[in-house]
Image (cartoon, rainbow, N blue to C red):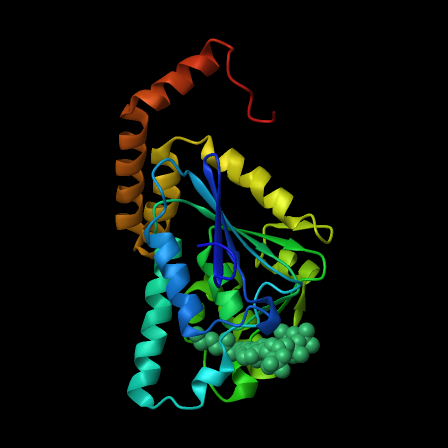
Length: 257
Ligand code: 1HE
């Protein structure tokens, strides 16, 4: 998917760079763009170990394409929200970790897409908002499930009750992003992080993507049991044994290197 596609994809060795590519509409997400995103993350080529989701133009995404709301009845609205859930679950629970690189507006559905990624890097100048409250609607792309886990329910509710906008610095403090960079340095940072992630064992990345969220959603006893199963599986794999032996032989970097 190249050129004027709404989602542009570029392979860089073990990394997949996925770009929201509708800058004239501030990367507002219409049905076509959403389905493109789902298709890309459903067909990650073999050999790819990590993806970076970034954007063309000065804004990550202005959220849902509001033109599409005008004609929708109740059942259409329900199905449309479920399409968002499917597409964003494909990002969160797909085959590879995804690093989001944010800039400018990260609004509504744009923030929902960012929240489905595994790590968020925000450039200075990024701003976050959930104008759904002001528009008389509600979040529909999974924000009510994902955002309270990142920033807490009260903060998310505040953003919707009051239309409060958060700056990049506030987003970093509150957990919306894990990294902040100068303007225009986000993609380089995202790629640097993705290269690091790509060096992990597949089991570690799988556990972080697919098991940790289940543990977090579990009751105490079930969570601990899942953790034990995961560590036992991971440590029994040859690639873990090699890494442990390398450390004990003084051939692996220390924790702080
Ligand atoms: C759009 C959209 C959009 C821009 N749907 N067309 N999201 C919002 O409520 C955010 C609405 N957007 C904005 O507040 C601003 O556009 C921005 C702050 C992001 C950028 O401002 P600016 O001055 O750079 O651009 P602009 O002039 O406002 O917009 C440029 C064009 O993009 C313009 O179209 P044009 O044909 O007149 O050039 C805008 O109409 C268009 N555009 N944002 C449709 N959102 C799963 S449910 C999720 C629910 C939500 O996401 S609600 C939040 C919706």
